[in-house]
Image 1 (cartoon, rainbow, N blue to C red):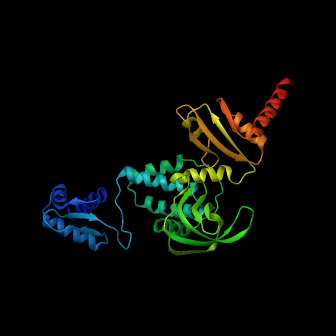
Image 2: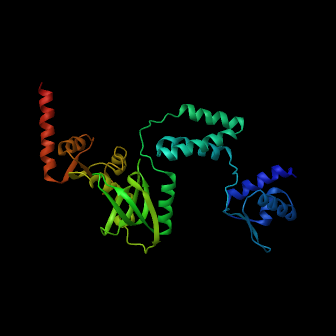
Image 3: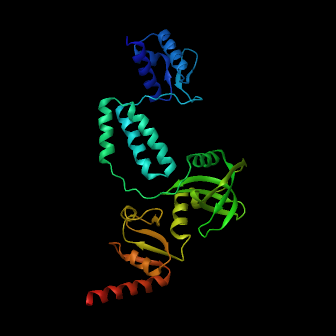
Length: 318
């Protein structure tokens, strides 16, 4: 039989690896009696782990949710995966979340055994992230918004629009979407329509209200497509739709979902909706793809493409 401390760690690892265990199966894995298993479960509970027991011959054990966060046990691959995710989060997410991720990563690496510490250090030294300034979004605000989405709670908040107009909004939230920035997808009660709100433009006043009855979501429930359409075409002077003779995977490899809405038509054709404040710029962007295309709308794009061709012909003639 393993020493008690080693057996407790083994028991905790098994409980974390599966939703629930039968008592007899768990005892067999640990090579102990049912009585010893019960004592070990009691020791884990005393240490703060919420182990739930199911009585009876067919009873078993499961690791539940507790009031506090006890230590976790991770195998090597899981520990490195967490370290990699935290390292990426220090740059890819907002400043406040990145700082929290950095603190968590430092705590995790301090308790790594030597073999894992070396591998984690190699990840840190060799993994280079192209950082860019991110709007500050408090972790507590994101947590509050996701709680509102999950509990179907009305949210009231102060908001500053792209043009700088301030207003109070009361919405029925559906989801929080991350595209490099954080967005809340919600039904605006005053405007009677679905809207996308940048979370970094929220004011200090954010309050949860009562429970609402869910509505039929936009885009047939595809909120990612709704955000992509809103960001790529909603705020611009011009909007164009083009069909490319290319697969959706080929187009999506070049286009961020925050820059354009990409839709599969069939195995060989893809529709792209995109907006900009310059029609000439849109024409140059469309022409940059290495595939044939068809302009769906507007007719002004065809004129802009001719202008681009004339500019290129002029440059080649010099």
